[in-house]
Length: 243
Image (cartoon, rainbow, N blue to C red; front, top):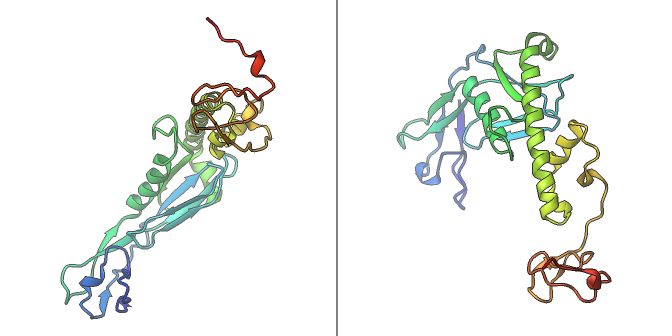
């Protein structure tokens, strides 16, 4: 049982889903039911980046999964979470529980769906969950087939990101800003080290085009916005257009 103090004068809610007007100057109680000790799920990740998911409307609502690999998957065991509903000013807050399956499914889907190129089918980050609490040393033995399936899906997703990076690199006149960290991660994971956008480069300070006002790279003579030629550029006189 937890007693929540009166809200602050500025009107900040005490917890997600509760507003100050529902307190009426009284202390309210959130009575938490006993948790089911066997209501557990295990989230498994072979994605080589740390995952930090926060669900602001439930408690517990913070989920952190370490970076993992196919050889050394990372795990996070989750239980049930709850949110509280206000049904009457004179009654305790009503607990609405969510099972560990709902929680784990939400963490996986919300994170993966936020990623560019993910279709949650054949191309997605290598993150999934299984029923029950599984020790890390058991994952590769009990879920070997699933890990191999997720590695294929993750490689498919990486390939989509690499193709996007190639297109963005060409269309942006080799601007490194358009290449995301996950695109570079995908290329390295697929051993595509020959990609020009993977190499070290220095950021170019963009300048304003005097003809259209758009931002352009001073290393190139043609503005990508209005196609005007900079007469001061040393290559300006060498440009020839097809008729």
